[in-house]
Image 1: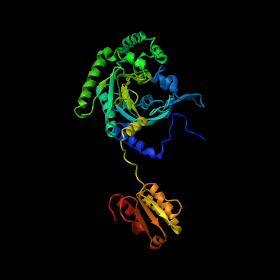
Image 2 (image 1 turned 60 degrees about the horizontal axis):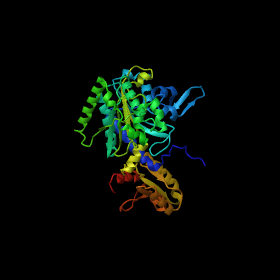
Image 3 (image 1 turned 180 degrees about the vertical axis):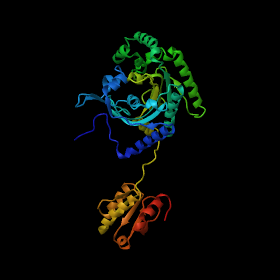
Image 4 (image 1 turned 90 degrees about the horizontal axis):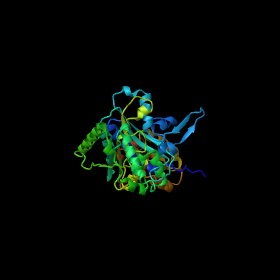
Length: 427
């Protein structure tokens, strides 16, 4: 008996309502902000992620699904979306378009990590990227887009965490201070964080180890090491976000000096939306500015900012907050046939579908079993064809919800009658 690989899931029809709701909301909000869809390949050159994401990151070190193809090239299933979008930006000459280029994607990602709620080895992301503008205005726009996305989903009771990581050339003095600070506690650090102290001290700030988190509470703050340009950018962003409060009474944020990102390409603004009191374990949106990335990938120096949002995590939050989502389109009718009416029922089903009526032909069973089948499918109506209807060239339409009586119509009026009933116009 085969089973799905660990860290993957089957998205069954009953859950598709949630997926459609989230995807449709993402597309609607992205379009409202002027973002156009982009789709990139499921796999890319391994070097794209090694150079872009960073050799010292957990993703590159132990989480990528990489393989050699028949031509000897090393390829990797996409572990995140930003590097691919930036590669597409350069390769397709998007720097010649009006800047910034605003794009969004809905795509599967692949990371070999320990599966847990909302975090799977194959997971799906809604992501947005604005490439070609270094201003704080675009940072505020991206954050507002994320806020609007959550609000349109009716998700409430979340918090926005915000920080600045400065620019790479400004970060060395800060990293030295950070390393010195944590080195004082080297004897207390867990093994995993002791290794990070050597290769990526910034990652100690978002450690999940309680002892490290306690030590990190008094660690040096990146905001104290901003250069003049980064400080000006930060001040402008804070002013813009404070302005959002005048439009959205529920909008708020708090500065968290321990907020960092797990990828090497981030600079300046970083942010996360998470459920209140989640303790960093339920992030719904995470993003930030990545001005160095395109140059790292071999393109011209080009600023960018974006975010990624795990759809699985969002659906978990929808269910946790007991948010009702719009139902998928209901089945308009199930056709129930008796005896010799079977062929006529099949022809009627074809005719109804060609007239935009959602219809299923009940299996060839007893009349009672067919009616039970129609009820199990949640059909709005049953359309009954029996000997009497065949003789009269008609059909009986039985509403399956409410107290409306059944009624009989000519066969060529069935589509109109079902449509009218669906629109609330009873015969």
